[in-house]
Amino acid sequence: GDRKLDSQTYRPAPMSVGLAVMSGIIVALGLVGLAAMPLLIEKGQGVIAIIVAMLWLVILVSWQARPKCYEIGRDSLVIVRSFPFIDVVIPLTDMHDARTARVGALMLWKIYGINGLFSNTGWFRSREFGKFFASITDGNKAVMLSNGKKYAISPKYPDEFVADLKHIINQV
Picture 1 (tube, helix red, strand yellow):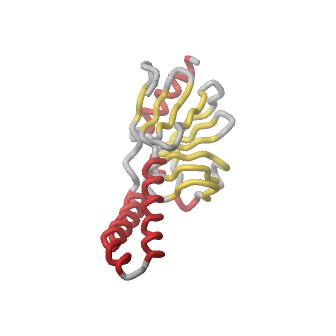
Picture 2 (cartoon, rainbow, N blue to C red):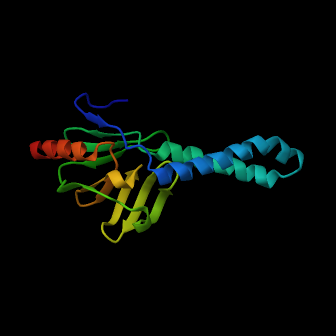
Picture 3 (cartoon, rainbow, N blue to C red):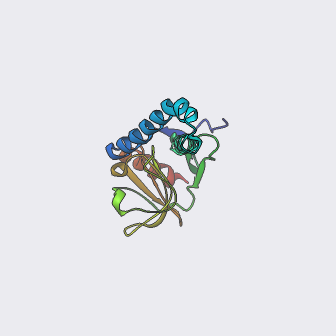
């Protein structure tokens, strides 16, 4: 769309092994269900057919919610996502912390969001970070941000991302 020409774009980290395995299993179950759909309908198993359709809805929604990329502009960081999800805009004016971190999956408590299917996206809580919004694909490559609210993202090259972000913050 209408992105600023002076923004810097960063790819998300590839999915962690655990996230990739969990996503693969769920998609495989969906494919088996899809392949069995004619038989399910023929045998009068409409409820199971509806469950398979709901599973595909969850898969598609989760795919769209994952971070497509992260963009740093002059005055904001944007987590770019696909329709129907709106991009998450994080103002840089009050940004006072940006650092790499490891966000262990076992230490996350989901408040609201998607956990384990293509990304961990939504509101989470952990002992170490408290409440934060996450849009991560690999917890070992997380960047924790704070501007009054807390955020976790996972750019492919977290150290480079933090250095670039700190450079821009110092100019704001």
